[in-house]
Length: 476
Ligand code: SF4
Ligand code: SF4
Image 1 (tube, protein in one colour):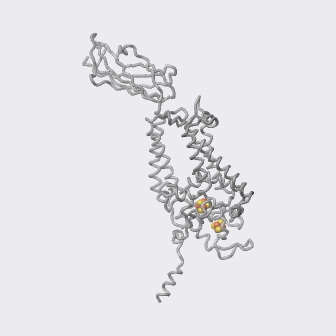
Image 2 (cartoon, protein in one colour; image 1 turned 90 degrees about the vertical axis):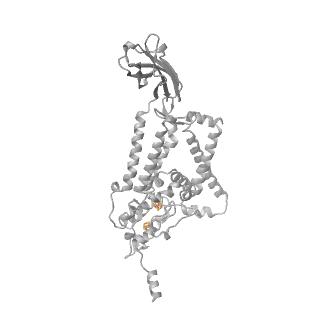
Image 3 (cartoon, helix red, strand yellow; image 1 turned 135 degrees about the vertical axis):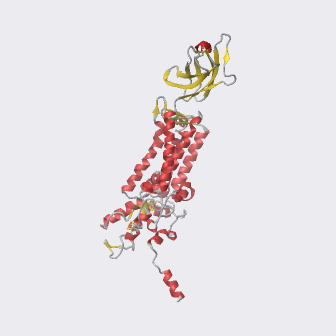
């Protein structure tokens, strides 16, 4: 009796939920095999190329000019970041912090809505691997030919193909490294320095490190980088839930799997014909039919593959499709904009965006602060006039030294003592200048009167700013 119960339990048909949550089926390639994925066309394949083209900005961005300098330049040595006409100094680093927060939360929102879509479409590791494997396919052929070549003993043909392949890969790695350095120094000067071997040790070191790791990660480690090295891949599990839209196999439609026999679909089976094309195209070697895989980067290539099969057997698309777990299991779904985690993430993202926009519109090319001297608050001169002392702190955020004209408006008949009306400022630093303002006592109306200081660049009246302070004296 006990035996019969055990036997019944062992043969009990698992529910759809159990099948989907059955992680025993997970296949994780721990580096023991090289994935040679099949390349096929399709909607998501095209989307991947469009998304990857964003990285052209990485290579071409440093050649954009703005006036007589590079449009985007992260000048670490000069402690200035130039982004078109905006210059960010260390004092404005809070904006960069907000920008990082914005992108971190954006990643969380996107992951919560659509899983690792960043990994599948935009991540540099995915994009570089895609380019590297495309070159590999052009030189070595389709996956079967590549596997065959890998197993072949060393021959002149094999050595030539492998040498050409690794040389091209290495050149891409070097170009990646050089392009990275161009964001930190004027691109034209940097190329000149590389060609004349005058580049700094740091620049050469950066190129070497990038070339080495690009080659190692994109040519050899490939999906293993996502498995073992990427922190985002590890934490994304806490950002997804049953409502997250991911590439998913419709188990209710696909099972039980049939076989294609002489072009005929077997009757009494689901729509999956066990062609394994979805596995063959997967760049991480996973089988989406076993549920969400640890290595799945949600690239959608298995969807393209399966849709093509469905076309051939005259079935509707979508046996594998982007869908949430609840949708696949036929449960009620919650609209994206009503999901609490999406709302919370979006709220934080909007706050940081507001901060960034505020910063952008309030970042002038010059900042002025005026500190009123406290000890003493004022001095009565021998002619009876009242004198106040101020310290002007001028932050010149441009990329050149500037002479500023100073003016002050406030109490009647005020004068700048010694007619100090010019200040020379060095770029990228805060310049301090002390000035004295004097007002005849009879011209004063009250103890404290507002006074406004304005500085204007001598050679460009658009570079100007003002600061309000006060003029203090005894009761008039
Ligand atoms: S491509 Fe579609 S039909 Fe072929 S094995 Fe995968 S799920 Fe089944
Ligand atoms: S299972 Fe599908 S979506 Fe996931 S990585 Fe493989 S091909 Fe891309």
